[in-house]
Image 1 (tube, rainbow, N blue to C red):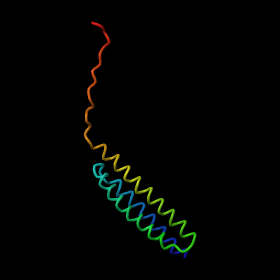
Image 2 (image 1 turned 45 degrees about the horizontal axis):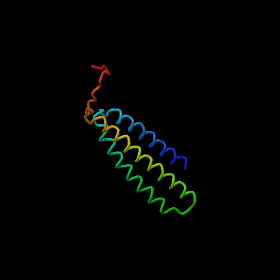
Image 3 (image 1 turned 90 degrees about the horizontal axis):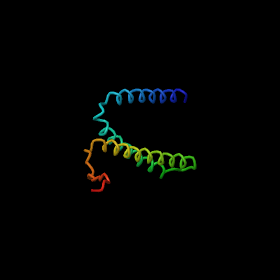
Image 4 (image 1 turned 180 degrees about the vertical axis):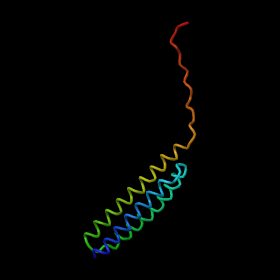
Length: 107
């Protein structure tokens, strides 16, 4: 059991390291499509966590499944909010209506 846990921890650490290295090398112009793609993946994770929660047999499994659904939902919603804010940066700024200011001097 300790050997399997060590293997899982090693894979997790390597995945974190590789993920950080890959994301650091992505140009800023590609961050929005990358974020949209990761949102799609997190949507699949949300569906998977709901399926697992539906097959829960004990209270612990129900609590952990519910927590997984909540966290996955927060991740999806947060990802779409960040993507929307990033896309707002690329929209052209439209000038507002010009207001005529009078200097208040009587003629």
